[in-house]
Length: 236
Image (tube, rainbow, N blue to C red):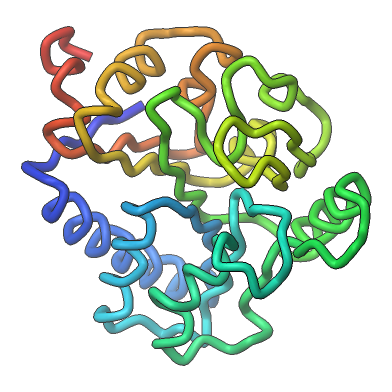
């Protein structure tokens, strides 16, 4: 798990946008397309907004989400809606390249998770899964102490009882996250420092889900100095 520490939040966002732009260019040149699973959260939104200013061939980029709030399609709580406002509505990405996880249209959460798993199977390999991390060390909608953290053999699960509203969500499992070629955790703020130390210090996934995230070829922790402060003290 490689660690890259940036001077502050602004540098984290700008330099991660540069890093991601270079990755997309490399993937497009090598294989004709690039596939990214986006994340929500405030830093994730700032990163997407920064990408809107980059010169990227969006016709060759496919996006989905590592988790989604299971609410109506037009709800402001949807990660997809926030991503459209920050980035997707501002760039020429074809509608067919945007693969939203299901919204709540009355379908049961279990059936929506099955549909989302089918979506991922059709989408194919993911080049990069972007993740944020909460102060409790959760990633996607995998929260400490909830059974979904330990779910194996499926790609997307329904989550109920989320400690963050809304309580009902869809989430990649650890297996789905770790099937990605690359996993980047993009984290800012002093409130995340204890969780970063816990996750990188070998805590069990049930305690610190973020520590279980591993890309097949690359795992990067991209932190600002505040989020990394306790890591620097511990040398991790």
